[in-house]
Structures are given as C-alpha cells and as structure tokens.
Image (cartoon, rainbow over all chains, first blue to last red; front, side):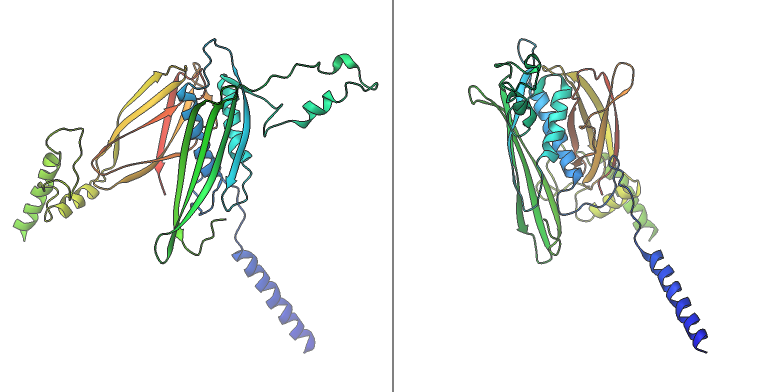
Length: 204
Length: 144
C-alpha cells in the first residue's frame, strides 16, 4: 500500500514538472534587423539604431565633415552625457556614429584623446627610457595628431504624466560637432524618441 | 432602403472625385478648419471614410529622386501621398547598392519611422553614408 502511494506521488510530481516545463516561455534570439517585437518604455537597441542612423545621415549630408582640400579631418569623441534615469553606456550610440564617420571616408577618429582614448598609446610612450625596448620601435615625440573636430552630446529624459493610467516618456538625443581650434560649431542635431504607455511601466 | 443605399454609394463615389481641396494645392485645409465639402460633411464623411477603408486605401509612392549632394553622398528623396483618410504610420528601410549591385553594409540601413496624415502628401530623405553608393532599394512595413 505504501509503495503504491509513493508510486502515485512520484507519477503526479513528474506530470506536474512536465506540464510546468511546457508552460515555460522559450528563449528566442531576436532578429535585430527585422525585429517586430513590441516597443518598450525604456530605450532599447532599436531606439539607438534609429537615433544613430538619423544623426549620421544629417551629419554627412550637412557637409560639415568635408574638407576643402580633399584631405580628412581628425575627429575626437568628447563627452556624451547620459542624463536619463537609465544606466546607459553612451558608447552604445557613439560606437555606431564613429563607425559610420570612419567608413564614410571623410574623417578619421583619434584614439589619442577624448572619451575613446586608447591608454596603450600613452603607455607605450612611457617606455622611452626603458632599456628593455628597442627605442626605434617606440613612437617619437611629436607624432600624435591633435583633433581638429570634436563630437559631444547629451541624452536626456523627461517623464510626463499623460493621464491617470498613462505616462509619456521623451528621450532627447543631442549631438554637436565643433572645431577644436576655433570653438565654432559646424553641425548639431536633436532626435526625439517619444513613448506613451502604462504608468506602471518603469522607464529605467 | 434601396434608395438610401444607392444614395450612400453615389456619395461615396462622388467623394473620390470631389475630395480634392480647391485653391492652392500646396496648402491643406483640414476638417474643422475649412468649409465643409461633400466629403467632410458630417453626414457623408462616415460613408466616404468607410468606403475608403473598404477599398483598403493606403500610401502611394509618387517618385523617388536620387541626387548627389555637395559632400559627394547620394541622397534619396521619396515623395508620396496617403490616399486613406486615416494617418498612416509606417517604417521604411533603405539599402544602398554599389556599382556591382551589391548591398553596402552600413549602420544607417535600419527600419526608420515616419507617418503621413490622411489625404496628404508626404516626403522623406535618406542619405547614403558611402560615396560608392549608386543605387538603392527600399522596403516598407507597418509601424506596430
């Protein structure tokens, strides 16, 4: 009798676990090119894609990166402030923009200064007095090029109560391109991504 | 009853011909702003709208103009109009092709959003981020 009860209990347990595993939401990979997923209140990769695409198109079309003598500008990425309630690495936006500027053939990005600094560029220069290194393989003084243009910007968020049940979240992507020598601004653009949804949704 | 149906069908047909606003075609005077006409009349408006929805009217592309801007990049200017009475929100994605007809990979070829108000023209511009772009292909889909 005891064995039979144990058998029934284990059968029920197995059945429940099979049923539960059947109800579990499956993990799927996102088709990042043709994603038809529902929008979310927070910023997702589609918003960054859209903002970066619009900003790059505007910057290239403006002709601000076109040098009269046909050579290429040296561009540095300055500070891009995240003033949203979300933990955003602003590189998520800037990496796309820098890639497109580079591939456009109109400018080169510098890793010597700015937020995209490569520490190794400076570390290798500190080896000038080291006997362990062939000094001819170390960059000479005065070889780094200073940036002629700098890109800086800001991403900020405004939360507005739309009605009793809904909220409106506005995200602003602002970017500007300035001449490092004169301080003059050659180009700037703002992209707004607006979302309206349940007040219960948390936009951070 | 038959006469009533005939009246509404006639009105709907008329609406297609008389829906265009008079005056300067560049200026759109919408319902509630301008004077009523046979389409925007409070009685006939629902019929015209229902007929338009029944016909499945949507956006139409009138022309796609390609030109190279001063910076040397190819620009695509798309002009179209929305035949429907409702605002149509849609997405578009432009891929750029090189001289061999091959797709140029770029971060700017993403689904972008736009919208066109009912019975109105619309236009948007897309810029190729590479100078070797010579042609394009564009796709559209609903904005969910």
